[in-house]
Length: 258
Ligand SMILES: Nc1ncnc2c1ncn2[C@@H]1O[C@H](COP(=O)(O)OP(=O)(O)OP(=O)(O)O)[C@@H](O)[C@H]1O
Image 1 (cartoon, rainbow, N blue to C red):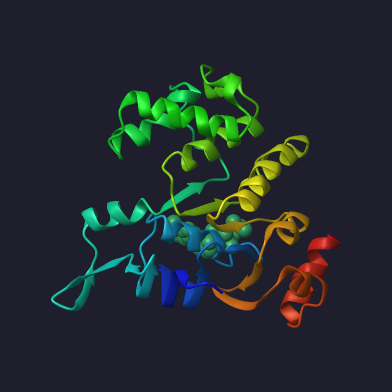
Image 2: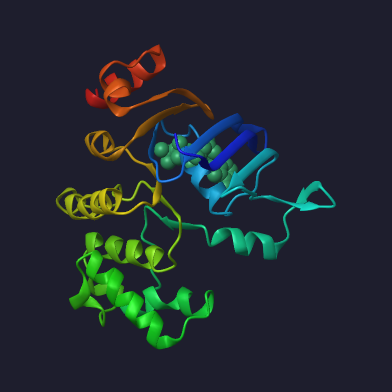
């Protein structure tokens, strides 16, 4: 693995009495494409939401690009991060959600330019250039003036990908990006993600139930259960010769649903 760009050290996350991440140690190398698989409720989305600073942590430390995410240094001691620190750290990451989360009252172009203008301080002209570049990358240059409601789910998800990329993050987080789509629209979104994975040195962390896709794009697959990594390795190993019984059971149930 290259030097880690994401590093979880003994991270604990609880919701009330429920421990969702249980002293999790987890690393992602710079440029690595990692897929997280696992049963419902095992904490997969929580890992991404914590990285995107949408959920706090209870214990442990996370480093992103060599800096603590939820903490900052004060006189050599780690103290909880300020809002300003969190805002800065967030720029390292872009996230694509299951439910697209586009701004419904804005055109496709404005969806993509909004954050570069208001968060990064780009001029409208520069932001529009960027929007063109990324809408082209996701194959939607001709849809820039439409509102999201006029697009198919697959197109909306591709806009969401362009919107995240327009912030030029070093890390892209995908949280089940195709599970809200009709089956015939899944392929176009996976194709865009695959192209990103092949042609860009982005670090990618993906939660998905698309096992075939995970096999194709991942450098490493992590099987999560009950807030811990039960097994991890190259996709050919985890999918075809899983070592752990829990991974075997999960994959068997997944591939042969009752
Ligand atoms: N905001 C919240 N408040 C309370 N409990 C939560 C909250 N978010 C998640 N949980 C609980 O934390 C656990 C892990 O949730 P998480 O969404 O990370 O699982 P997951 O592995 O992504 O599952 P799925 O595949 O169903 O999306 C679940 O038991 C869930 O009910």
